[in-house]
Amino acid sequence: MTNVVSVALPDAAFESRLREVLRSRVEFIELIGEDLVAAGGKRTRPMITLLAAQALGLSPASALWPQALDLGVCVELLHSASLLHDDLIDNAETRRGQQSAFRRFGNVVSVMSGDFMLARLLGLLSGMPSGPALTRAFGETASQICEGEVLQFQVAAYADYTLAHYLSIIHGKTAALTELAASAPARLLQSPPAHLEALRTFGGEYGLAFQMQDDLLDLCGQEHLIGKPVGGDLREGKATLPTLLLLEGPHAGTVRDVLERRAAEPGDVALIQRLAEESGALEKTRQEIRRRACTAADALQALPPSEARAALRSLAVREIERTR
Image (cartoon, helix red, strand yellow):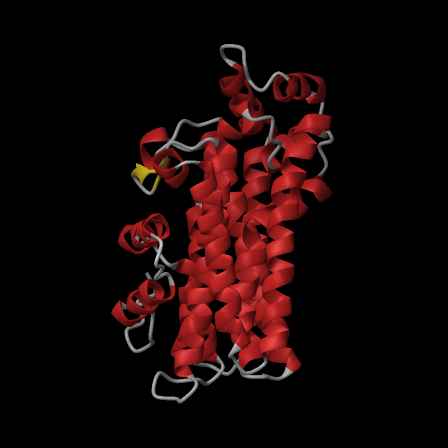
């Protein structure tokens, strides 16, 4: 993905440490932890953490590298805990091709296993340099994730569709965690404020661009490529950026009706797709994705040149390329 081979990324050592941290004397918790490790995934967030640490000058040979590795584990645990809770909220049947945890073990086991992961990450943070600052950062991010999820339901319930609400939602859903993943190593290493801010900006803007792109594909992507039916957000009453742009134009009434009835009538999704294309809302959304991704890439200029910095930049560039 990065075409950079001399930087350390999540590998067997990371997976082994993740498995170790998730170990429990309770079988059901152990099984959910094993599912998490076995499912793998892209490990994008811990990858960002390890790349950020290296961009700040930390090497795998450093005495602090195990702490950076644990920081990546903490980021993955927070992400995984939120997914366990999300699957229950969304009544999801599967996660990464496997039966979702709450379907397999029940609601209580799934929720408590997510809480177990949060407890484990707090234990790891407590033993790190700058532990209090890191714990505050993780706690604030966890709060933002919760607020973003609940705000999404609130907006749909009240039909209170605004750009400010949308940005708050996607920051909570996605960008808050990528911002944390990128900036946490700067807290661990007590880096200069300029480096902390550069990584915060990178992570936040990259996360927003990534979620906007995901939302765009939900409306106009190809089902066989995205792995789910298009129009899912409309069917849940969620207004993403293309829809919000339509709400500012001459078809606002029609679009609001579709959102409020949650695209329940035949042809509703196709109608919004057509209006978004014809009005230029899709292209404006692509422009905003490119703008956010460029801001993320440019923020990294505050860091010294390195292969790790180049690898981080390539993540933002990929979001630009995906809009073409």
